[in-house]
Length: 180
Image (cartoon, rainbow, N blue to C red; front, side, top):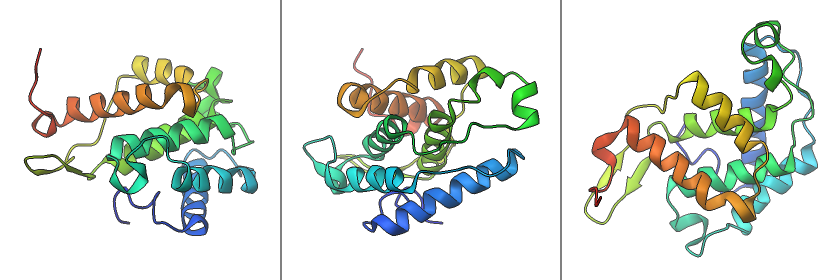
């Protein structure tokens, strides 16, 4: 599967089906049963990411971090996944209180997968994010709670910076030179 463009193929139907496949696989791996997805809501998310991109550069010219943030904030705000994550291993473990945060969990994990191997076009060179983003359990829990209340209009820039910082933490050679 091509990296990052699997969310921004330019075809709403293709992207929606890809996201549904991702959700099905995620729930299957957790043995969480079937996930009910509100398809009109999901189509609205994908369409919004393609046509109402929240940055002046638009979708085509934006960084993978901005694409991840636009998807995350739109997806979490629309809440297309209706079914909580009802997995025994999830509910009995350290995540039980987050079972109804399924939209933030899926959005974040999907974007982490998408950013792994993504290409960044800097002014001086092209960089590939070789290392997958990883975070501590403590950070993940707090981030999922924070993302669960985000909206595109209010949180897009911050979510973009979070993805960028996390990617540069695990891929320090990809970062722009530090100024402070």
